[in-house]
Length: 77
Picture (tube, rainbow, N blue to C red):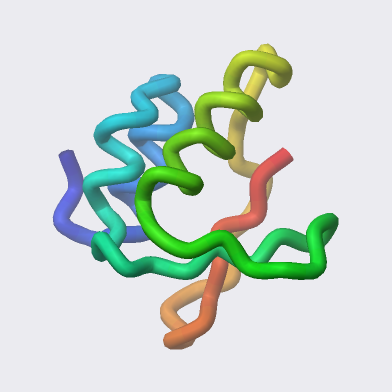
Protein backbone atom coordinates (compact mmCIF):
# COMPACT_ATOMS: atom_id res chain seq x y z
CA UNK A 1 0.00 0.00 0.00
CA UNK A 2 1.42 3.44 -0.93
CA UNK A 3 2.33 5.87 1.86
CA UNK A 4 0.67 8.83 0.11
CA UNK A 5 -2.96 8.83 1.37
CA UNK A 6 -4.38 9.86 -2.02
CA UNK A 7 -2.52 7.05 -3.78
CA UNK A 8 -3.48 4.58 -1.03
CA UNK A 9 -7.16 5.51 -1.37
CA UNK A 10 -6.95 5.10 -5.13
CA UNK A 11 -5.37 1.65 -4.79
CA UNK A 12 -8.02 0.58 -2.27
CA UNK A 13 -10.94 1.86 -4.35
CA UNK A 14 -9.68 0.34 -7.59
CA UNK A 15 -9.19 -2.97 -5.74
CA UNK A 16 -12.75 -2.63 -4.39
CA UNK A 17 -11.34 -2.93 -0.84
CA UNK A 18 -13.78 -0.91 1.27
CA UNK A 19 -12.05 -1.69 4.57
CA UNK A 20 -8.64 -0.54 3.30
CA UNK A 21 -10.21 2.68 2.02
CA UNK A 22 -12.09 3.36 5.26
CA UNK A 23 -8.99 2.73 7.40
CA UNK A 24 -7.35 5.75 5.76
CA UNK A 25 -9.87 8.07 7.46
CA UNK A 26 -10.08 9.29 11.05
CA UNK A 27 -12.90 7.81 13.14
CA UNK A 28 -14.56 11.25 13.27
CA UNK A 29 -14.20 12.02 9.54
CA UNK A 30 -16.84 14.02 7.67
CA UNK A 31 -17.99 13.08 4.18
CA UNK A 32 -19.61 15.86 2.17
CA UNK A 33 -21.78 14.46 -0.56
CA UNK A 34 -22.52 16.54 -3.65
CA UNK A 35 -26.00 14.98 -3.61
CA UNK A 36 -27.06 15.09 0.06
CA UNK A 37 -27.32 18.36 1.97
CA UNK A 38 -26.28 17.08 5.42
CA UNK A 39 -22.73 15.77 5.96
CA UNK A 40 -22.10 12.15 6.93
CA UNK A 41 -19.99 11.86 10.09
CA UNK A 42 -17.76 8.94 11.04
CA UNK A 43 -16.39 5.86 9.34
CA UNK A 44 -19.64 3.89 9.68
CA UNK A 45 -21.55 6.06 7.20
CA UNK A 46 -18.44 6.33 5.00
CA UNK A 47 -18.19 2.52 4.91
CA UNK A 48 -21.87 2.27 3.96
CA UNK A 49 -21.49 4.86 1.18
CA UNK A 50 -18.39 3.23 -0.31
CA UNK A 51 -19.98 -0.23 -0.09
CA UNK A 52 -23.13 1.04 -1.77
CA UNK A 53 -21.23 2.76 -4.56
CA UNK A 54 -19.06 -0.30 -5.17
CA UNK A 55 -22.13 -2.54 -5.34
CA UNK A 56 -23.61 -0.37 -8.10
CA UNK A 57 -20.60 0.87 -10.06
CA UNK A 58 -18.77 -1.93 -11.85
CA UNK A 59 -15.73 -0.11 -13.24
CA UNK A 60 -14.79 2.25 -10.40
CA UNK A 61 -11.57 3.97 -11.49
CA UNK A 62 -9.80 7.31 -11.30
CA UNK A 63 -9.64 9.75 -14.17
CA UNK A 64 -7.85 12.57 -12.28
CA UNK A 65 -6.78 13.79 -8.86
CA UNK A 66 -6.90 17.31 -7.42
CA UNK A 67 -3.49 17.19 -5.74
CA UNK A 68 -2.19 17.88 -2.27
CA UNK A 69 -4.41 20.77 -1.19
CA UNK A 70 -5.69 20.21 2.40
CA UNK A 71 -9.27 19.89 1.11
CA UNK A 72 -8.35 18.06 -2.08
CA UNK A 73 -10.59 15.19 -3.02
CA UNK A 74 -9.94 12.32 -5.43
CA UNK A 75 -12.15 12.58 -8.49
CA UNK A 76 -13.80 9.28 -9.24
CA UNK A 77 -15.70 8.17 -12.28
